[in-house]
Length: 282
Image (cartoon, rainbow, N blue to C red; front, side):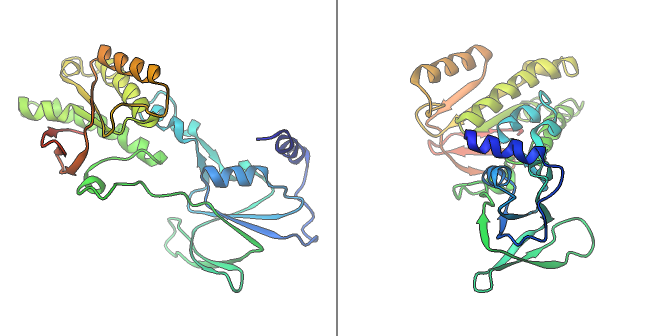
C-alpha cells in the first residue's frame, strides 16, 4: 500500500456517511473476496466509483495463518476479516457469477447461501474485476482430490484439526492393532514450500506437545513426514535457510524426503515415483 492509498483509507474512515447516491458514478463490480479482491476493495475511491462485491464468501482469509489456526495456535476467527469491514461504503451480494454478458455489461449470479431458494440475480457494471482466485492444483495425480486434505480455506483448517484428533482416538481404541496404529499416527505433508514447512512445524509442536497431555501413551509412536518433489525445501529462500530448516527438522525427529514425487494416492497409501510406498493416517 502506498502513502496515497493510506491517505485514501483514512479519509474514508473519517466519513460519517456513504457518498451521495444521487450522484451517478461508474459502477465497479468485483468478483471474489480473496487477496486480489481484498486489495481492490480496500483501496478503491468510493467517492469516484460505486463499488459492488459478489462472492460466495463474505469474509477475507489471511491464508498465511491457516497452518497456525489448524492446530489451535491462532483462533480461526482471528484469520478472517468480514468483507464489509474492508470498505463500509460498498454493497456486498452473497453469490457466484455464472455468466458474464459483456455486450450488455452485466453479470448473472446465483445465490450460494443455505436458504432453500437459491435464486438468480443480475448486477450491471461499468467495470468488472474478476478476482475469484484459483482451485488447488492436484497436478492430475490419481487419488489426490479424493483422499488428501488441503489447506486453502478456513473450513480446511477446521477439518484438519478434527481429523488429527480422530486419528488419535482411533489409534487409542483397544482393538486397534500395532500395524494399524502405526499407520494412523503417520502424518504426511506434501510440498516443501513455505506453507508446507510451516504446517509441518506447527503440526509437530501440536502432536508432540499439546496432544501429549491427552494421549501420553501414543505420542511416542507419532511419525511426521514432509515430502518434496524438488531437490530441497524452501527453494524460494537462501540455501543457508534451507539447510537450517532441514537441520531443525532432523533434530525434531521429522523425516524430510526430497526428490519424492507422488504418483498415486489411495485412502491409506501414498505411492512415489521411485517405486516406494508410504502408509499414512492423514
